[in-house]
Amino acid sequence: MTVSSPSLTAKRGLLDKIESVGNKIPDITMLFFFATIICLLLSFGLSFFSFDFLHPVTQDPIVVRNLMSGSEILSLLTSMVNNFVNFPPLGIVIVATLGIGIAESSGYINTVLRKLLSVVPLSAVTPAVIMIGIFAHVAADSAYVILMPVAAYIFYKTGKHPLAGIAAAFAGLAGGFTASYTPSIVDPIMAAFTESAAHIIEPNYVVNVLCNYFFSFACTFPVIGVCWYITDKIVEPRLKRSIPVDIEQVDNYDTSLNALEKKAFRIANITLLVLVIGFVLMLIPEDSMFRAENGSLTSHRAPAMQIIVPLLLIFFAIPGLIYGYMSNTFASMKDVTKSMEDITRTLISFIVFAFFCAQFLYVFKQSDIGTLIAISGAEGLKALNMPGQITVLGVILLTACLNLIITSASSKWAILAPVLVPMLMLLGLSPELTQASFRISDSAVNVVTPMFAFYPLIIAYMQKYCSTAGVGTLVASMLPYTIGLLISFTVMLFVFWGLDIPLGFDASYEYIANQ
Image (cartoon, rainbow, N blue to C red; front, side, top):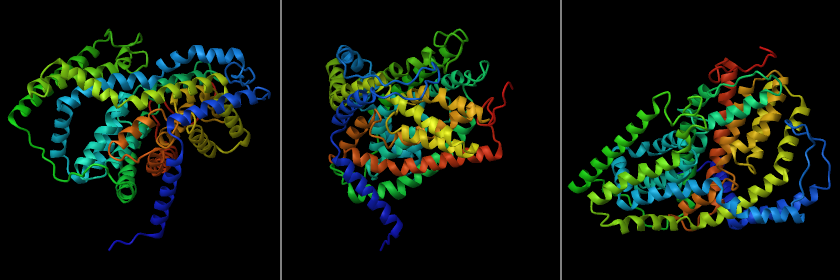
């Protein structure tokens, strides 16, 4: 007989209520449609007010633009197609999915998973998925396309709840933007905004791209531990109790391969290894065409960072083709084309969502409402004039609140950096510390906001196993991770600060003018 503690029962009841309320929210596509309408109306109303806030870079007063005027409505209509076509996740998802479709239909991905299942102990499945999520963030947004269905399938095949696999992978991947084993494309983007903002106070200030690397590496340990505990002790038990799986659960799975599959798998893997080694060798020369003009491989301007999605297409498609033809899964090119067509059909709901989300982002940006929210919040924080540690905690909480409506890390930091970095420099706190504070809540809160661009895609993966899953299901499942990650990251930052452990290369906690 199992006895639940009152506190655990209360937590489950709260999450059930969140799920129930969340699933009553209109379809997420319509949510963005309504958000666009509300933003248009707000732009009209706020355009009649004047604000005392100044833009930190231009020093111009913040003015909300009335997007209900004739010229602005015309501008919205003429840019509508471009907004949709240039919606960043759209191309990433479609291109990466084409390669995944080939590898999946050929049986290559299934075989990879079968091999993994044969060597990974059941007790280690959860931390393995979380760790893979932390590694996968180097693939940027395309990792969401790959990791979620794979994690669900692994959990499903090992008798665990597939939605718990998606939750664990999502938490590890989102947490990976603060917790990281390796540098990623996010690092140079963040550092560039931080350095530019620091120049407002000190024109010659230099921010190292890896100024938060030591802190990021150390955070991988609490991410794995916290997310492992939350998955196995909170999320999965609740999902098994309240969210039944629509398809028959398989506890006994066959991980054996026949002779033809073994040969095809071996050749496909050798080919993939050759492709990866060949590409790595091409990165080594200092004059490599894949490097940026300054020789960097991790800069967002480096071709190596810009071709990650096409590389994923190639690295999935080629081994998939080899495996498919050698194992007789593919009989002709028609089968290959059909594999891409079939998997693309699963993206229809995401494509429809992308259209409405793109229009909302355009309206939100053009109106300058986001800038007003960010700067007013930062100015309020400054007015409180609190001690350094409390101010940093305030930055974390402010970013957490903003992340519920502005989920793009680069967009938020582009707005906040020119406000927060100079403000904290004047208080004697370094730009590197401010950047680390921002990244804590930026990572932790991504998983719990329906405004996150990949939410509809993740929900679509969930509905493959549980047709009743919706926004509320995902939010309720991810809320414990947000709380756990936010607390563990914040504690880790203050431990680093208290012990004076460097946040990264060329990084300190204090700022001394003209140092």
